[in-house]
Amino acid sequence: MSHYSVKKGAFFMGFGLSNVVLVKSDKHGRMIPEALDAAIEESKKKGFTPLMVNGTSGTTVMGAYDPLNEIADVCERQGNIWLHVDACWGGAALLSLKLRHKMKGIERADSIAWDPHKMAGAILQCAVLITKHKDLLAEAHTAGARYLFQQDKVYDCSYDTGDKSVQCGRKIDAFKLWLLWKAYGSSGMAERIESCFDNALYLRQLLTETPGFRLLFEEQECTNTCFWYIPPSMRGQVAPAIKGQMQVTGSMMIGYQPQGQFVNFFRMIVASPMTTREDMQHVISTIQRHGQNL
Amino acid sequence: MSHYSVKKGAFFMGFGLSNVVLVKSDKHGRMIPEALDAAIEESKKKGFTPLMVNGTSGTTVMGAYDPLNEIADVCERQGNIWLHVDACWGGAALLSLKLRHKMKGIERADSIAWDPHKMAGAILQCAVLITKHKDLLAEAHTAGARYLFQQDKVYDCSYDTGDKSVQCGRKIDAFKLWLLWKAYGSSGMAERIESCFDNALYLRQLLTETPGFRLLFEEQECTNTCFWYIPPSMRGQVAPAIKGQMQVTGSMMIGYQPQGQFVNFFRMIVASPMTTREDMQHVISTIQRHGQNL
Image (tube, rainbow over all chains, first blue to last red; front, side, top):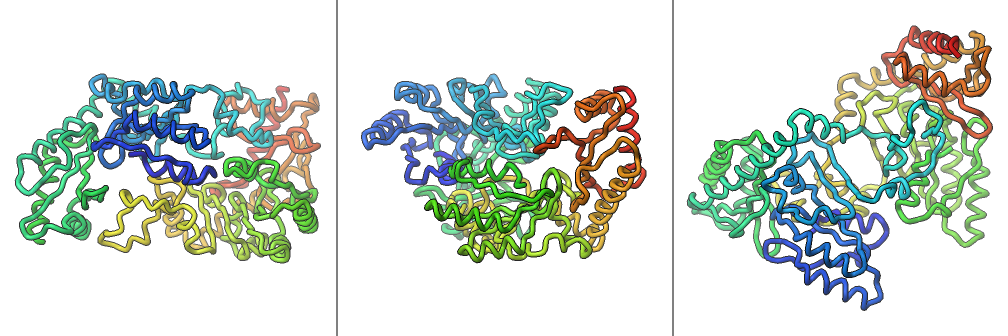
């Protein structure tokens, strides 16, 4: 269940949407490696040259983690196709020894995107692109604008990153991640992430115990807990109506969305290490309260 | 003297560098409309379709303002070619009734880029893209990702801008501009910009009066004051050496660059309304002081 930015990138870069091939995923939203293999074969038969596979570590809606090792195997076998992993949402799992197994194989990616401003708690915005291909960013982006990027400075100019990026003068957002890491340390960062996962599981348990709530899936991999709430009086437009009431009264904000055959469902994401079990109880009781008015 | 981002954009968007045609500018760095007209004619003769002209309001190094009305005339006559104006640096002149004449014709641009985080004093980063073509951004960028951009919300969804932009979740940088404008008002904003221009002119006057300094040009349009300083003992690598001393001792930071036949020269830009005449004197005396050690 790749993020729509893959399509957006394809048309922005001039590849065109018809050259984006969707690969089948299982019912939890994980890419099926055999389906990827077959899709690449079929593309090649049509005379195309598949050049990049997008794996996802933590999909937007369901929080699924793609099986990266199996996907990397396919990429290698099919002729060293570039493996990009969109770990923007779920990449923070790597910070925890307990949770990093979800991203087994991530070390085989050619490039990784990660947003520490999501679950890692950096302030918006802090987006990271990691690649093992040294010098590639310079080769791809450097315009050699010597009138801006002088080479006769007092320090080592190879540290100047301006010309290696797509943009020019921007804030150094990576500094936010560095500060955060320095402040909490690796174990502190791990605890923050683990508390998100713990709370999400607790919410899941609460949801199974409280009447009127229904989980979408029998398992979940990330902190995305997808559920419906159906008050006795209403079975149709519950989520938009309750979100509307929440916004108008200012009580709480919680997202909802449809996907595939599932009508609007709430999607509660635990992203802040400051959240508590009381907060999880609050989610449930606030939705129940608004449901009384429907 | 277009910014290098025009080239960068061309290869990023897949047009290729060979399809970027450089237009001759006069000795102050202003595009020559007749040269633009001739370049378009020549491209057409070769079978190409010129589709965009980049005008600049405040070039990076010299601070030149392109003659926008004349350029817009050429764009219209040549078949309604898209006129983009890069006003990132000098666009703040529009905030002042005294200075806006520099950008006469800007209202004819199809699109304008402006960085209020430059001369207008917004904190980094605050970049604005303005276009008179309503709905174009939605047409160009919308990926229709309904799972993220739900249409059944409690408020009018046409105000949601996420799917209309290149990127998805980002800080609303425009808010910084709005706050600034609310705080200072239009006349307050104008005063801030005018004080930059006033100080730059004063610096220019000081430079002509102080031995050892030499201005690059007999006139300047923006707050970019380009000059050399040559201490008695040294005629070659002055600017890098003095900048190096400044950085090592932490006394001051001032940029320098080469351009065309001119070897490294300092480029002093007044961008903050907090600057004073004393600051301008400080620039001169600090450079002189470091020059004594060369």
